[in-house]
Image (cartoon, rainbow, N blue to C red; front, side, top):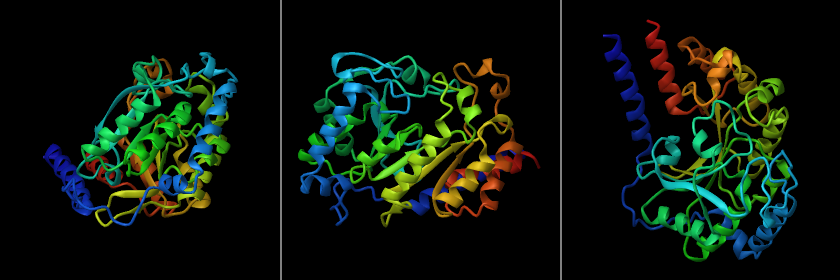
Length: 349
């Protein structure tokens, strides 16, 4: 009986989300008056200048807080191990993202290889750590964006984009001139330099950052770059993202057009600092900020070597995290987070 109840709760949660979205299935429906931010920047003649400024960063690379200083334009590689060109593992419609991104036609996801953070518990470690993928030119990357638009995806979802930001900007302009009109979603680990996020003002429509850790010692312990500055850099960058795009805005079908959406992964033994995270969001952004508190932590890659994170989270830990969020008066919690709360509560009955 307990299994049946959990299944029913989960189904009801997913169905209610689908009903709220009511996404249109007609791929050829006329566009409304909304346009992605980069269209205006191109009309103002500013997009090319932003691209030039971004590529200049590669000469002495400081695209992320590691600030390696290597000249990637001459083939040098830094901590992220990325070459001059972007490396892409795959591009396809993704239906596992947040409902305002996936709708009924999927989020047009482009998975970039390599990473500037490389967490020891990374679930995509063959891509982000080992660098599986192939080099693509800006023109090829633009074609991928247009492919995703042609098959009906709701947005272009750029996964782990930090170290290839100049390539993304170059590809976006090429794709725009060929008819791209989807919102750009910047899907980042949060390990960003605020000054580089400012370069994206008027280009990115949707920011989807993680805020993984609230404590510098925990942040340094669980990634390969010993990123003790992660909380500081992520928080400053997210504040800048919020300044640019504000709270999530959706169309009449519930599909994201612009705004900030934050992810936070609940980890064993309160490693992520979830209680501090929810308070920080409420106090520094808005109680209406879209927040996805995720229950999907599992022991991946090297996590089994670290005793405190070498297990799954318990129902009690996820329930505690969600209760903290509600106590902080966060009012725009992800629907699947709420469904998972019901599932975990049912397991304890």
